[in-house]
Length: 156
Image: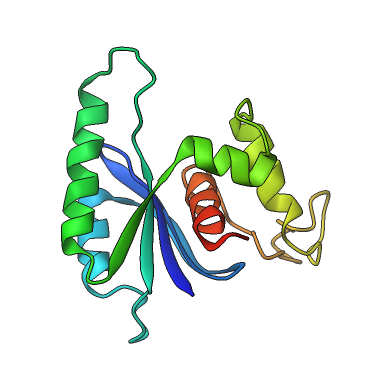
């Protein structure tokens, strides 16, 4: 299954275009750029089967304008995407990857790394080095949660 996994934000969004464990394309773009990308997803004529996005959830605390702006962008992304879309909650990613609701970002990142083969160079061969890149080479900040969403929705 080809999945576009996104970690939406109020101004920019992290994304990973995944086919199973393979991360075909990834990045962090301004939200209007993501909207344009959703019309031509993949760029190779093959449209993803599913868009999975990290959905905002309530923790019982007041939230600011950024959370509401993110919700508006999620709605715009869903509207623009031409296939099925599915919300994935952070707690589901934590349970799926770490088997714990108490998992932190570092735990999730390590669980993602552990799913990939250590074929690159350096201290973390799943990420690798410029000379010997691993399958996760170049992944940064908001792309990690997007990959977590993609793995969760695929059950990997």
